[in-house]
Length: 257
Ligand code: NDP
Ligand code: 8X3
Image 1: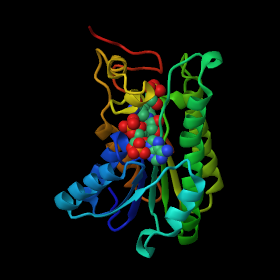
Image 2: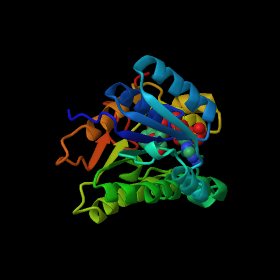
Image 3: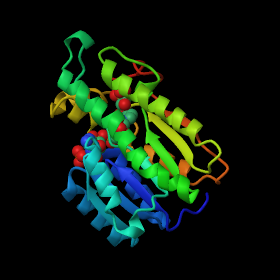
Image 4: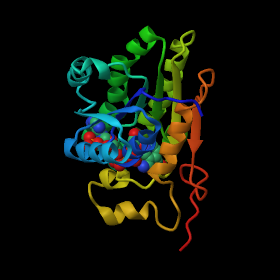
């Protein structure tokens, strides 16, 4: 494990689930944590906890990744010692609804594409030039099994994650010849607020997604993100598909009742 001490780790969507778990997993490594999401109080609470527990330096930012102007200005107006991002975890993302495409909500599609695809692009475009300039950096995108396999009614969410996969591949190609690394960590079922958000607070429906199986935890994924970030600099983990043992494909899940 290579030291990443003093490096600035920027995590989007750090107020919940995988993003918050990544913050907790990086905190003991002596990094500096730049945490962003829309729900600032949650970020502040997490940052306070991590500062107390690990003495880690944190900076929290209220950020809607869909807002290009806000993304650009938030990063440009950071205190100078926070501007030089070493590790970017592009995690902010969501699904909305589970509908046949021809019956789907266009508003839901736009929210998913604006967040998962355009938001990730805005943040990447704002951060990576500095990495190239400083000849140091690592972008870790949170993709999904949904970017490898489309499942019925998953159409647009799966499309957004397939786009993330292509964007990760393209970014790695375009950064060839620089030391900047690009990884895509692509989970299957992880129990977070993801399904609650997808089903707009219908908790009973959200729970059925994980019924009868042991899903991945956000910590399982954070552990893998940290693994990617702490390989020697000549090692680029390009793509990792990570599933619960009880899942072998987007629709192949073994449930015990
Ligand atoms: P959560 O709902 O628990 O967390 C999602 C995070 O994204 C929240 O912190 C939320 O913060 C943030 N977010 C959403 N929209 C925006 C926005 N417009 N601007 C900034 N931040 C935003 O879900 P997960 O932790 O599960 O999801 C994290 C990532 O993992 C997503 O990209 C998801 O697609 C991916 N993923 C999840 C899987 C799962 O089964 N859970 C499997 C595979 C991939 P806030 O609302 O405060 O802005
Ligand atoms: C989240 C995993 O299978 O619910 O990306 O779409 S899935």
